[in-house]
Length: 330
Image 1: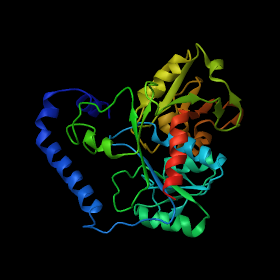
Image 2: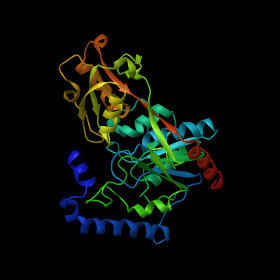
Image 3: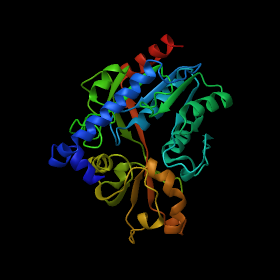
Image 4: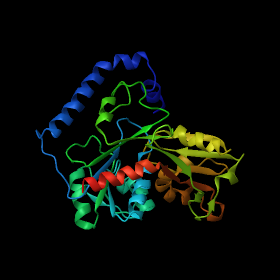
């Protein structure tokens, strides 16, 4: 991923060489959208509002923490949200209702994290239409949030929220494979909100705030400040691991980086560092690693492996306008 970042987030000969393929990719993606929007291929509407939370770029933009924050907000506002997700990396076939005690290998890391954080019903499936129908058949939801799926045009949507990383933006601006974009930047003119992860120059933005670290075996909680000036192993298998490492450094930690690809399937060797230093990992990685800890640290009292949850601090305007859009389209 580091090598791809070099090509995708800079102007370089490799990217320029791949440009003809990028133009073809863009043309195909635009044609698909045209076909579905003009009724040339069947698309399906749901009886409740569907909110797409996605992006036009590959890699981590922070959409999952934003979705979790919006689920919690909508529930506090009296709505009954449910979530659908593709379930990237899931081994289960067809559509599956996620349970809090599921294995991440079964349902995927992000759907399991969403379920555990929000307690909202979550259904996964490559066929998002079928996943949404299963969700509505099993649960009394009056609004559905889709984790990603902006390019899944077979499912009609009522609200589209595109998440953009305010630091990395759109890389070199090219579509795949020369750059990180799934669709051209012009696609953002068609969405309801472009929400920036990071900067606060726009009304539509959010930032991520660290919660106290949670010991994976004992459940003990510690403020990150208690690790200040401590040498730690930092583990991240997310779309943009450097963000996690830099945020830990901003908290005063001495970070030894262990980046892995997004949705990495861990083995015990990945987190066995043969020393007693604390191991801190993202919450998304923790849902996959918890069952490995006993093999690495058989004595629970010596466990020093911690999950670092984050919460999204969402700008008021995002939440206010989302409620307005839902009311308009119910």
